[in-house]
Structures are given as structure tokens and as C-alpha cells.
Amino acid sequence: MFLCCCEDVTLREWRQAYGEGFSEMESLKRYTGLGTGFCQGKRCLSEAAAELAALRGAEPATIRLTTIRPPAEPLTFAELAALDLDAPGAVPRADGRAALPAPTAPEEES
Amino acid sequence: MIPLSRGPVPATADAVVIGGGINGLAVAYELAGRGLKNIVVLESRYIGSGSTGRCGGGIRAQWTTKENIRLAQESVAMYENMSAELGYQVFFRQGGYLMITENEKDLPALRDAVALQNSCGVPTEFLPPSDCRKIVPDLDVSRLVGATFCPKDGTAYPFAVVWGYARACHRRGVRIFIRTTVKEMLAQDGRMRGVVTDRGVIHAPVVVNSAGPWARHLAAQVGVSLPNRQERHEIMVSESLKPFLDPMVISITNGIYFSQSLRGEIVGGIGDPHEPHWTDPAEFDTRSQLVFAVRFARALTALYPRAAQVRMMRQWAGMYDVTPDHRPILGGVPGLEGYHHICGFSGHGFMLGPVTGRRMAEHILTGRPDEIITSLSLDRFERGDLQADAFVVG
Ligand SMILES: Cc1cc2nc3c(=O)[nH]c(=O)nc-3n(C[C@H](O)[C@H](O)[C@H](O)COP(=O)(O)OP(=O)(O)OC[C@H]3O[C@@H](n4cnc5c(N)ncnc54)[C@H](O)[C@@H]3O)c2cc1C
Picture (cartoon, rainbow over the protein chains, first blue to last red):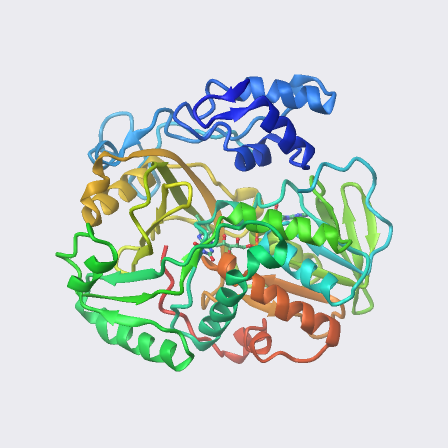
């Protein structure tokens, strides 16, 4: 059974990685590649976390998810290069240049 | 890899190493290989969660100071053998580094650098712009004025490297504790006594501070004042493509660098002179900024127009631990026996980690002075012996 359809990670591989000692989401993601494909984990992360909880014999709510990275959808370099950082919605930084409209990662990264 | 451990930390150790990045794991591995028993590595989050796991994985011997060249050269030799040595595939690949410039006035420095590197045995050559296309066929060379190329430079997958070291440490009996934070370093009567962690106290005569961007903060607890400052650096990865790019391309003009991973992704970043810097870990901000993605995309498509239709998948950020001369700080400090630091690597601690770990382990166990460690010791800032390396990029 596939857990991550973008990167072809099966449930068995996820469990095997856990058995090799990769005991948390951040390391499991890097080792298996789960959540690093086109959907960037939108389809698989919660299921993978639930599976990790089962492996640990813990409540799903105790599992720390991976940090979500921008962009929300993959963008081409041409699209990115053409963005106008002075457009409305782009928040100026202290040095007068534009920055991301809103924080994209939790306050404290895991 | 290292599972979460639930028990308390041991009450005593022969050496405590702070930090589960490349430097902490490499020095622990080398200490164990020289017969030291009872070594404990403490990592506050997970293996590679600091700068190491954020980095670009680039490894090059193209520098402009002898210490950096020699360290990197020895490190390249270690990387060549690393998968076999650690029994773990670290995805080291020698596609070379192409260092390009758009600025006429860099050319004498580039030629001097080639001469210095050649004198150390590094096979770098100077290339006119047209020859760059033999190495990267679709590179837009119209604005370039010259480049240097060293075919032995390369990249490795940073996580595989730290996982490989962690497993090899484990085989040598090193105990690694993740999710374990050093709260305090203990010193008394001019010697290190151990550390206080959030899971108990460990008494130890030797403490290695390899906490990367957090090293300065920890050192201050035992009265060691490091001149390092910490800055955010951003990086990104694209979708996977068929192999098309052998070397790491790096511009000393605008600081862009990009290479292709063995998974096929373009991995790259670009330095930003406007970024703030911090010294207090509470201020570290590794959130991503749109301005980075836009600057990177503009610089990449200008140099490599065929990348225009490639999609960017993710961006992230990490910290550089920067010293006034962009060279690491190694060794101990007079009057504090048992204390050692391996920090201040700026943007090149991944490539130097294996060799600094090896040299530091030898130095810690034998007490013998090491020429390079001596020249990179903390007191160089008092001696005024500063030689900034000009090839600091990214
Ligand atoms: C975007 C980016 C790109 C880079 N690209 C390259 C490159 O291409 N090539 C290159 O050579 N270098 C590169 N670097 C630099 C390189 O990543 C660092 O120099 C190197 O990883 C430093 O390794 P380290 O082991 O010293 O520190 P770290 O990897 O930061 O390890 C320190 C560890 O200590 C832990 N820690 C901190 N405080 C405590 C505590 N109190 N208790 C317990 N644990 C603690 C942290 O969690 C961390 O894991 C890059 C860096 C960044 C940010």
C-alpha cells in the first residue's frame, strides 16, 4: 500500500525506516522522501503521522509534524522571477524591501 | 539511525560532545576510533537538524587561504572514501565546482587563487567564458569574464553523511541522545566538569562544544567569548530532472550557487547582504522569505535560461555561524582544561567537518599541537592574525 503517492513510499517502507531507528517525522521524511513530491505532503502527512503514532504506541496528537515549506504549490522559476515584490500584499521589511506576506513556518521549528 | 531514547542520560562520561551535526558526530567518531570509551553525543532536536541538514552539501578545495585549502583538500580525500569508511551511502559525487565571475577586477584574484591552489596540489584551472560551456553546455556565458574549475570538488547528501556518522559512532560504542538539550556547561577550578541537560547531569572531564550557531551562547556560560555572529541563509530545491548538470556552479559576483542532486533536483541558494544577523539564539529566525525565492529565480534564469520552466518545490533556511575572517574556530582556551570548540564555519562547515573532526580528536587525545588548529585558534583574533578568505560565497 502506498502512503506517499508522489514519491512512491509504501507503508512497508515507512515501517521499515522506523525499524531502522528513524523515529520522528522530520527524519523519516528525509530518509524515505515521503512528502517531498508534488503535493508536498498534503495528501500523505497526516496518514503517515497516524502510522508513526501506531508504531510508537502513542496518541496521534503527540506526533510532531514536519515543518511546512513554501511555496504551497510548486511554481516555475519564470513565474517566481516575474513576481513584483512591491505589489500590494507584499509587506515591506525594515530595510524597505518586500518580504513574505505572512509567516509560513511555525514559530519554533522542529 | 538513532531512535528516541527514554531513559536518563549517564551520570558520567569520558567525553561529552554537544551537537548532532557533522562536526559533533565526526569528532565523536574519531575520538572513539582512537580508543576513547564512554563518549556521549547530545542533540537537542534530531540528527542533522542544525545547519548541517539545511546546507547545500557542497565540498570544494577552491579557497584563497592556505588553511581552508588544506583542510578542504584533506576533506575531499575523506569524502572520496566516506561511503566505504562509514558503511553508508553518502551520495558523494565529484562533478567539480565552476566558480564564475562577471567582474573584470576579480580576474587577478582568480588567477592568484588558481596559483595558490595548484601549489597545494589542487588541480584547479582558469577558464575563459567560452570554455565554461564545455562544462555546463546551456550556461549563458555572455556576461561572464572568466571562471575557475576544479574537477575534484563535489557534493554529498548532508543527511546521509550525518546518518552514516551516527551509525558508525553507534557501532564504536558512542551513545547518542536526541531530543536532549544541554542547559548548562559546568566548569570549576579551571577545568570542565560536565554538563547539565534537561535529562540529568553528566560529569565529564572533556566537553566538545560543536553546537554550530548555538556554540557562542554555550561558550559564554564558561566564560569563553566567541566573536561569532549568526545569520540566516536561504536555499531551495526544484522538482527532479534527468541528469543535466555535473558541477556546482557558483558566482562570486552575486553569490548564487546551484548543483544537481543525485535525486535530480536543482539545489541552490543565493546570499543576501541585506539579511540581519543575531547573536542571541532566541532571535534566530529561520522562516522562509518570498524575496529569496524571487532573487534566486531571477539569478538562476539569467545564468541558465533553460531553468525557466522548471518548478521550485520547497525553500527553507538555516543559520551560518560566521567569524570575522570567515574561518572556523578550533581548539581550546588557556586556563580551561577539557574545553574544546569546533565552530564558526560560516558557509563551509559541511565540507570541512570530517577533517576538523579528525584533527581535533587527535589533538584532544594526544595534547599535541596541530599546525592548522593552532592557526585557527580563538586567540588569532587577539594576535590580529586575520586572513579573510575571499572566496566566501552564498
Ligand atoms: C543554507 C545553507 C547552505 C549551506 N551550504 C553549505 C555547503 O554547500 N557546503 C558547506 O560546507 N557548508 C554549507 N553550509 C554551512 C554548514 O551547514 C555548516 O557550517 C555546518 O553544517 C556546521 O555543522 P555543525 O555540526 O558545526 O553545526 P550544526 O549542524 O548546526 O550542528 C549543531 C547541533 O547542535 C545542536 N544544539 C545546539 N544547541 C544545543 C544544546 N544546548 N544542547 C544539545 N544540542 C544542541 C543543534 O540542534 C544542532 O543540530 C550551509 C549552511 C546553510 C545554512
